[in-house]
Amino acid sequence: MRLDTSDPAGAEKLGIELARLVDGKRPSVVLISQTVEDAVLGHIVGRELGIPVIRIYDEEGLATSSSPIPSEAKAVLVSEAATEGQLIDAAKALLARAGGQLIMVAALTQLEGR
Image 1: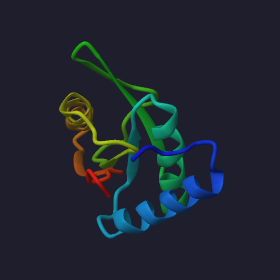
Image 2 (image 1 turned 30 degrees about the vertical axis):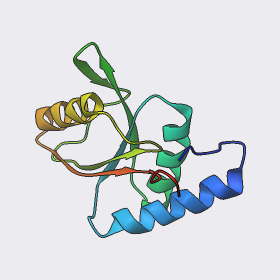
Image 3 (image 1 turned 135 degrees about the horizontal axis):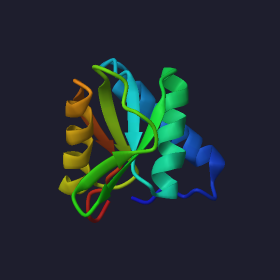
């Protein structure tokens, strides 16, 4: 399933629903990758939950972020597609440095043939 960024109402609806699913875990920060789709979806989730959104990068095994990870953060990694292990590892490494933890990975997926 691909997020259609040319459909703002659809993206908004998906983001709000994803925020509802994530809310019970009580995250303190949303992490996203550098794709436009992840930025759109992640910012909707962050807005709905009232928490900051931080972009993370994995540059050949070196994990970095667009801003500092808050101390003891409880993070949700939001993605519009199934997230590869490399990005999850980068999120975990950044959070560990700040004494935080990755509590959930929330990605949009579609089963084949559906």
